[in-house]
Structures are given as structure tokens and as C-alpha cells.
Length: 68
Image 1 (cartoon, rainbow, N blue to C red):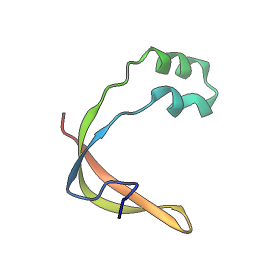
Image 2: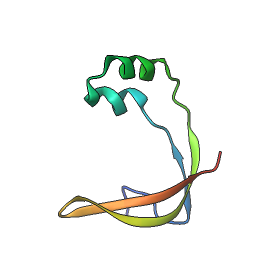
Image 3: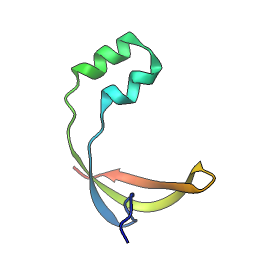
């Protein structure tokens, strides 16, 4: 079975999109700063899976630690 999220005690590569993360704020200064950033990839260890309710039928969250 293919999962759409990582399981606990695994390593994943994480890359965030700063522009997409602030666009909904309608804040020109935040958007300008986000555009000036260069996204990087980070190695992350998923130590524990906790519960986050995204919808009544779907929930997932992870406790992550940045490794490098």
C-alpha cells in the first residue's frame, strides 16, 4: 500500500515553498521576503506520528527533527 505521508522512524527529504506559504496572507512585505529566499532541501527524521484532524475522514501529523 502506498502512503501519502511518511511513517514514524523514517527519514524524509523536506523542501518548503516560502512563496506558497505566505501568498494567502496578502502581505506584500512577506511575499517580497519569501521571493528572495532560496529553498533548500533538508533531511528530516520522523520520530513519532501524532494525530491532526484535516477533515472528518482524514487525519495525520508527524513530529519531525531536522537532521541536516
